[in-house]
Image (cartoon, rainbow, N blue to C red; front, side, top):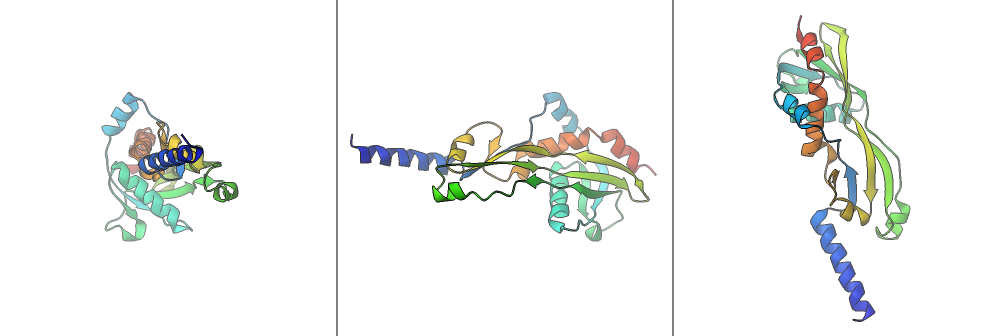
Length: 195
């Protein structure tokens, strides 16, 4: 077999794998939880309206609204100014997702052959507070840190469990992580909702 034919076959295999299993990025999913933790969270529902306070950069409070809605743990979740009735609890962003400001120059110059790897923090850190007494609150941490890879290597990484090429925070495993993390504070949340 000629050298040129071998290179074309390798390139075709790489393209098929990349198209089938993801783009040129791979991110770490939230940590997996035990069956008991998942069952406890699945049995949980709070008959509460959550009003999310606008953060100075609204993308983060909007992200918290989406996270809380996807958990389906509460009757309703919306921005404070869009909630039809007074909220039972107020949610405030207290910590942001973090990531390294990386320019993947080598990855770009080599068309993805040499990957760029950077740590990123996903999820949300927020507090739930009683509207009549904001000093009564519970802080909930749902963030996790993992490596994000850019380049062709990510197509192969996405074959591994715990990795995705898609939106990390909307992945079912991440939603499960949010549910379990919030359910772990059930007694405190129920205490805040009482007058």
